[in-house]
Image (cartoon, rainbow, N blue to C red; front, side, top):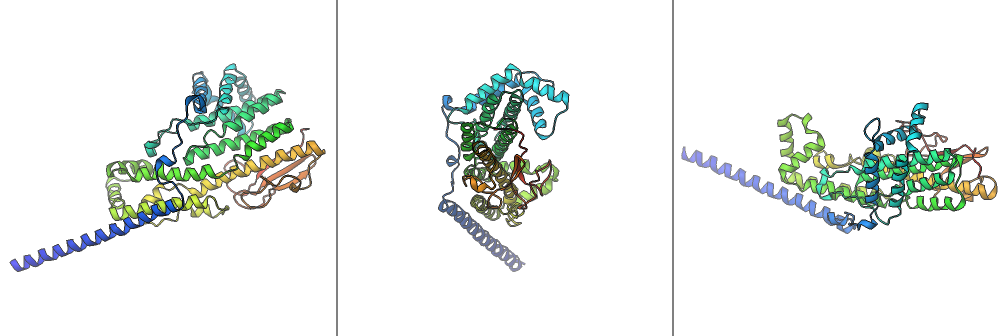
Length: 446
């Protein structure tokens, strides 16, 4: 009996030792993968510390964010039929940009925009755009819990600026309208320094909104030569992938790395928030977490996340590939569960950002066409008559498409589907078969 017990205990001890060795080897292999991932980031010149991506503090007299927040508070303090004047007016302005308002809604929008309080708030925003820096007080150490409430307010102010410019043009105040849209265009860059993907997507939407306002104003009152050049130079500064690439690094360090560096108890809570764990039975959620937090798997997963984010930062600088929407974000192994949870849909992010760049280039080229008409009495036969800078389509890597019609023109990018859809503009909830187009009807005169 003793010999049998001894053999059993010896066998158990051997199994334990073997398992311990296997575990130690697995940890060592995974740790080596993680070290190589960090070494690759450093070799590529990518930041590896959160302090490298957090924007520096800005002295109050130089910080535009303080004025933007002041304008927000001023409008939020005003009563409205629903919520507050900032949000109510923003919703009206946003609806008007998507479809014509009914006469009563249009009259209400115009009445609200003519209030003195709107002029005061937009004047404060204009002062902000003249400051050299903008830094909102985001807590970058909070990781995925960081509040980004300011983004919705940025969108609200941008909408109001656009609607105000169009109303001024309607009232025959062309000079004031172009001054307001210049503020709108400059205001769009308030988020440039924020190393967060959602911030850059909001910034992208603001830039597109400014381009749309510029195009609509040109129908009734094209800008003078000096004003046109100011807008072309300003928009040229938005034809840049650097803020997006910085945001990919920021996403990795501020959200991914900080989440993966949490103690196990906090990590489980954080992942539950991301995945809406309430939909998963408790015992299954606990078993899933035990698996993904098992040290060899966890270290390998973390290394996979770092490799994927480095790859995305590098691929963002490459020419557009429509297949990236499907492939970016689906490449990690099925065993890298954390990587799959934390990776944003990078293919869609790149598409959205390039749509903005296409809109910028279309607007710059369109302004150049209008200036050409003012100088030569008509539009050129081809875009070759313009300066080549800014007329290349980011989706095709060749020239934007252009044709004259009557006294107007169609100027467009083929868009993400990389097909010439004959200048068909995107409709709400349309994902393909559209172009990014400026259809200038030609009613306006220089």
